[in-house]
Length: 164
Image 1 (spheres, rainbow, N blue to C red):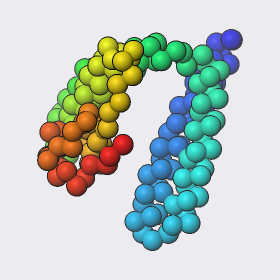
Image 2: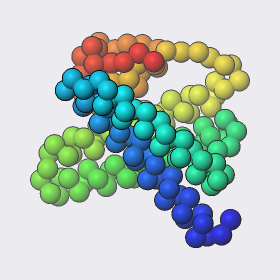
Image 3: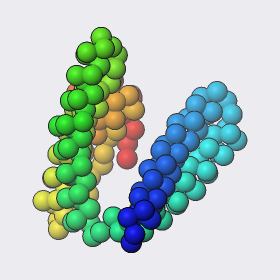
Image 4: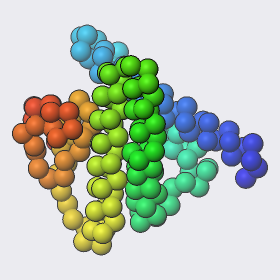
């Protein structure tokens, strides 16, 4: 594929991914404010944006077999945890923004946990091990099989976890 076309698909993928996430967050807010139909609209359009993003990702030939996808996901999570969020945390500290520093350090810790989950999944791929996950709605921490009493990253109580 031509470089410019490849870049266009990448930009489309990024834009659609961001839109889908943004709309899901808008849906939560609409639900909290008592607008269930608006929440539904935001969720429906988010799903549509995901379709657009998936089509672009397929054109970029980024979707491989599960083993390759796990490896790629592990590498991505390890990189963002070990490089990007450390830089973001330092930037927050340089700017004296403790709140931003907390968000970046918690995100870094959670991303490191994601990398660990991917690494474990790669070793258990052939076992087809099934587990239940619990996701902290405050910081995004993922617990594998155990609902913690308190989030080890942000100390949110167990009521802040969603079972998946």
